[in-house]
Length: 450
Ligand SMILES: Cc1cc2nc3c(=O)[nH]c(=O)nc-3n(C[C@H](O)[C@H](O)[C@H](O)COP(=O)(O)OP(=O)(O)OC[C@H]3O[C@@H](n4cnc5c(N)ncnc54)[C@H](O)[C@@H]3O)c2cc1C
Image 1 (cartoon, helix red, strand yellow):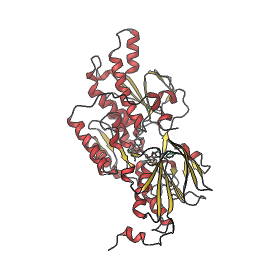
Image 2 (spheres, protein in one colour; image 1 turned 30 degrees about the horizontal axis):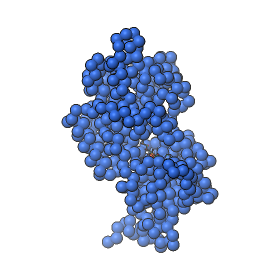
Image 3 (cartoon, helix red, strand yellow; image 1 turned 30 degrees about the vertical axis):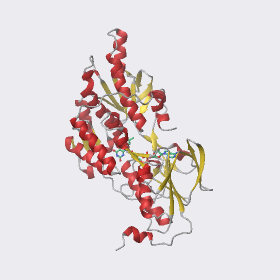
Image 4 (tube, protein in one colour; image 1 turned 135 degrees about the vertical axis):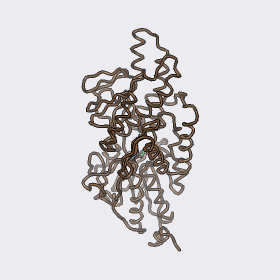
């Protein structure tokens, strides 16, 4: 008996030339769109092309574990060439889109090239939101790319190395405080997971330096919002706050950064915190590409219809963090939150809708009821709300890790991550500093190729 996919394929006669389907961005949305398109459309019906700056899908929810060295950076970089075998990959940044001529300009290593499309899916994701705060662009590091996560890990280790060898003089003691203070901005999942996991990691290794006691390291988490992890609701936010406080992390809510220098962070309440480490996780803004398109946006995200097509521009769809997809399962007047959970599922749905536009299957609006979020707080701590059920402690941690293993897109990636988790529990913690990424290459704008 023919499978559903075979039946869908045979539902329309093949065209004389395949349609050129181009996807911009190889993250959660773009990757899953192409994986589904490969299954739905035979090569005679559609020629698939991906334009992306990297040849991998970055599984960003596990970036904090790269920053603590539990995971190797390659564990969470899923090869596009190995997985999307029927897709042509063009490495580069799309710098301009001409909707009239159906052309893209791509800036790659070899210069600028043009790509034409018949069907276009935009999934360029988001970038770290910086605001216009003096000193942040020059001194803060985000946690959205592998180079940023690798840099932060090495930078924190370098601070401990330097602090350990400072002389016991007034100047040496002042510098030691700067080097042993870490400020994280943003108490959403990025900042909270980072500070919790990093604190747990450093606490376990600090005694390897002759003069450093784990309690000498000061951790500060600040956010303008009144709660930690608001995405998980009041109860779990309080649980996470309790875990952080019990570990000695200072949490400063309803306050943010007024300015930063290489050696200090000034908060909006006037507090000056001597610190050489400022990690920026204060939310995301849609990819700068969206603002260049000249199309309507909602808080910077491209306005799309419930089927993710772009109104008024035939044969163009947009998904993920860069698109304001109406959240039909919760509140249709609001867009779906910028999460991997939605971007991945929007990718699958948009693939079906694009296939429908080529005569295969049926187009439908995007509807997905949020499964809830998970947050790994390091050690045996975590908070999670799978399907609305609040969980804390080791059970939440187990659910968080199980979810990531399920959501990683390939078996190879699952095995690599699971093996590193196993090693991290039975082998000594990794503390070497390979120092591969320079600070200037991990500044927010540079790391994101802006
Ligand atoms: C530290 C961290 C933790 C997170 N934890 C969770 C979590 O636990 N659960 C969850 O659901 N979500 C989580 N997220 C959010 C999740 O990663 C994003 O919502 C998701 O990646 C969005 O998918 P996307 O396809 O829209 O964008 P992305 O996955 O960011 O992919 C966009 C791609 O487009 C590329 N691109 C950008 N501009 C261009 C251009 N001009 N031309 C070509 N290519 C371009 C980018 O390089 C990237 O490869 C986390 C994010 C971070 C940073």
